[in-house]
Each structure stands twice: as structure tokens, then as C-alpha cells.
Image 1 (cartoon, rainbow, N blue to C red):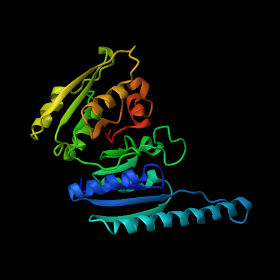
Image 2 (image 1 turned 90 degrees about the horizontal axis):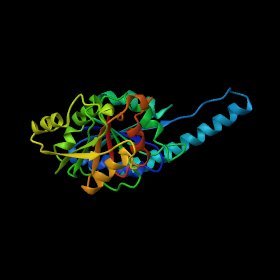
Image 3 (image 1 turned 90 degrees about the vertical axis):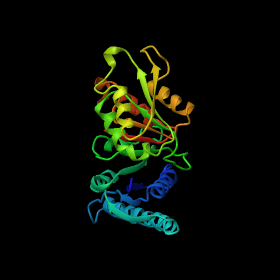
Image 4 (image 1 turned 120 degrees about the vertical axis):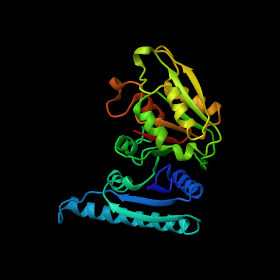
Length: 274
């Protein structure tokens, strides 16, 4: 995790993901690339709406400059390497531009704009598009340690395998690794890679993982996402590694049902890869 992308936007999760980026950079001797997008649209010059849009753009630039000055001053006092990119346009476009040569992209779990109780639109836009994993950070997180117990949400899919491989630098430092398997009805299971295969893969890197089976049926009132989070909390999980899709392709559309539920307001950071 030497090359870390950090999304900069003044929202509920900014401070949490800023601290996570600092912690990771220190633990992995990494470099933080701060990405700040300034999205707005211009109207037709000369008309009322064009003038209003231009004035709004000036205010957005002023606020963006204030935010940059604040965080650059803070970064200057930290013992990490960093750089800053800002650009007009969408955050998703800026992240896609820089992500190919990065090891991890850090995003917030809440929407930068819009309803805070829905999964982050930025995260859902980027799932499946980035090669390296994303870290989705909840607003209340104060610090991140790669040595904390690691949880792996395993459903035997290619996506969960990619997430496991992408998180290996963290997993190799974790003091405990738990593979969480939600046992569903046979017709809903995706078992391209059984849990034992995941444990064997980790063992080649001298990681001893515990396999934990969690029962679930269609009439269960507790969702799969909550069962995963509850199992993680019981074991003091520091983060949850997961594939970018849920357990049923029919329900997915753009994002899997389990993934969507986990993203609504996760209690711990999610490491997601497609």
C-alpha cells in the first residue's frame, strides 16, 4: 500500500478518511495523492443564468481553495509524503484518471452530496471500474491499524477472490484473519472458489485464517450484511474485505444487494474490489 489515493471533499467522512490515509502512509511508508474535484456547470455567458453560474463557480473555487489551504497546512506538519491534484469536473473522473497507478483509493461511506443515508454514489459509480481496491471509511472512525483483526466476507466468487488478493498487504500484518461465510440455500450459492481454497491461498503467505460459517435462510429477519457486521464486531474486526457484488446476480443490477446494504452505514472500514 505504497501509493494511496485520497478523495478530498468537505463532507461528513473527510476527517475520518484523512486520518485513515495518514495511518496507512505511516504503516506502509506510503505516499498520499490528494484528489480534489470542483464540479460545476457554466451557463451561457451574458444571460442571467450564465452570470449566476459564474458567480457560483467563483464561490466554489474560493471554498475549494480554503479547504486545500487547510489540509495542505496539516499535511505539512505530518511525517508522510504527499501531493495534491485539483481539477474542475467530477470526482469519479479524477479518480479514474489517477487510479491505474495506485494501490488503494480511500473514499467516504456517505454521499459527498445528497442523501447521507444512501450508499455513496461515488463509491457505487466506481465499483467494478478500479483495478486496485477501495477503502470505504465510515464517518466515526478515529484511526486505522492494519494490525487489527481482519474480516473477509467470502462467497466463493471471483470478486471476493480479487478483494482478498488486493488486501494482501494489510492481511499480512493483521494479528488475526477470519473468513466469514454466510451459509445460504444451495440454489443461491456461488462457489467458484470454496472457503478452503481461500484459507490455503493465505497459508502460502504464512497467514493462518479461521473459517467461520454463519447460517442464513430466506426467512431470516437479520440481513446478510448485518450478520457479517455482527460477526465482525464480535471478533473486534478492524476492517471487512469483500467483493464488489453480493450473493445473487439477479438482484444486482449495478451493485449487489449485500454490498448495497453494507455500504449504507458501515460500522468499520470496507475494503472492496470487483
